[in-house]
Length: 407
View 1 (tube, rainbow, N blue to C red):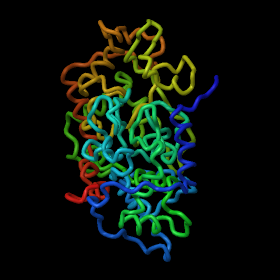
View 2 (cartoon, helix red, strand yellow; view 1 turned 45 degrees about the horizontal axis):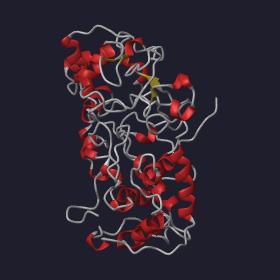
View 3 (cartoon, rainbow, N blue to C red; view 1 turned 120 degrees about the vertical axis):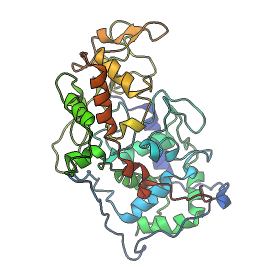
View 4 (cartoon, one colour; view 1 turned 60 degrees about the vertical axis):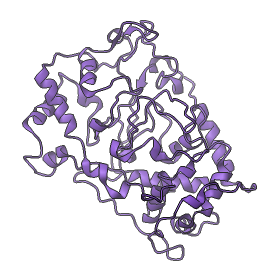
């Protein structure tokens, strides 16, 4: 079956190459005077090389995979953090990566379907960046999107839909960054020995390095399971854990492992393919059809069997990432459990009407189950125990452009 790259990826890859080599006249930066610079970046400086990065992994966590051509350094991570929160990385200067990935919401935005910098409504919700460095594939449904470096180009330069809206604005964006006093030191320190550190390639490398540090593994569940804290988990959450990992509910088949996802990878781990599942949310035609603007992996693979197949995201911090599913069409965790208990969703009226439980394409694990109200509360309490408040408030991941100094 023919494989297709998403059109936006093809476009942005070309755009990025152009940006890297760009020597065109630059457009004067706008509003930079209001972007007070933070303190000078740490590190030994361009003449002294870069500093080794210390992962500070939670107990039992493996080391994320890192591309050989983009090794982790403290300077690169620090630069990536500043870029992540910088609105100069949008075509109209209004959006940053953090606009759709808020730390307090486990780096989601709380919307059913995200909006880009131009106000365009996206077909899908913002995915959590929790433990994104362990993701086998990126985005909701693209088995060809395997690295953060490649994925970063999508929100920057993609046009279907527009996210940061930088297509056609690369030179302008780079010029704005060059004028920022902090970056004048930070880029050369992050990329010593580079002829032109101010380049799109360096931006995506720094952003990717920062995102690999977004590791969450200090929730009450972790403290109970790996830290020996017997009282970290309530009795109800413990009962919920037993149900979660039971063959009755089947949850663990798609949300297993240390990352509660079946699409994880790490250094020293076995080689595996990304996994995608049809969770029976829709069945428009009795044959398993999903809405035309949101058909899952099929939009990339062109294989009809991939209709409605999406990645099972990590469940870490799931309690703070409502609404749920790829299109935010389920509001609460309780309703998510109801959906799976029914073996699929039934929509009685409207353009998306259909009985998902009868979809011939749904996952073999979405078979339905019977659960009491008390058992449902137990499972919810277990899912809530995966909330890592240290991660949600960790200053290492917070906006470095402090109050009154935000770009």
